[in-house]
Amino acid sequence: MTSRGISRSTLLALWGVFLALPVAATMLYSVATVWRGRALPDGFTVHWWVQTLSEPRVVAALLRSTWLATLTVLIVAAVVLPALYWGYIRNPRIRTTMQVCALLPFALPFVVLAYGIKRLAGATEVTQPWEASPLLVVLGHVALAFPFFLWPVDGAMAAAGVRNLSEAAETSGASPLSTLFRVVIPNIRTGILTGAILTFATSFGEYSIARVITGSSFETLPVWQVAALQDNRGNPNGVAVMAMFTFVLMFVVSVLIARTGRGEPVRLLPGINTTQKR
Image (cartoon, rainbow, N blue to C red; front, top):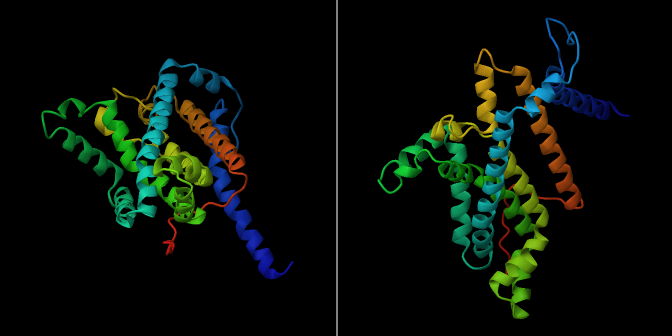
């Protein structure tokens, strides 16, 4: 091996250790009996896993986060796919507008976004009943996770040549809706799956919007984790348990998506100069 190859391998190894250490420490803490000022815990137990995963409050928070993230994925997909497809084949301005809107969650802190959504909902008598409702949390998560679905799907559409596919389908007599579901979506499946897991993970781990809008009346898993850390009688080991549980869940879903995609490369960012000529 050349010195350049050794240096690259060393950097990759150090980067791998840097990423693995927090995960390993969290895993050890989730099975530690007592961990004093030593490199390893004094003992190991599965008590914290059994206790945490059987606690009704934790199970309820986990279910809320799961259905909230799932609903967010479905709504974002229903909003993005038809509009982005139409932007490719008919009106490019739609795609430009969507790209600009996708930058807003990065321009505003999540807490500011949450307070803005709450104040906007309370501005009129018609929307005031939604001011502290879970529905408003769903809409906030849709706005927050929107770019994480848009960009992989946009890249997949650009790589698949959606306009050419649409023209070929039109010559066969297919309607735009039929083309979207029977031609376009099967060809951008990997991009959709990538956007879905990114959207799910973003919604599942988001804390600010649920906490600001509903307080503790709609306790998601991140809200429970923060409350457990702040409570002197809380369960810090349980927080580590749920952190590892979430990590394993996302890892398994990512592996399943990778296998479903059959190793196809996906652009995670929008394509540049992807407008295709007739």
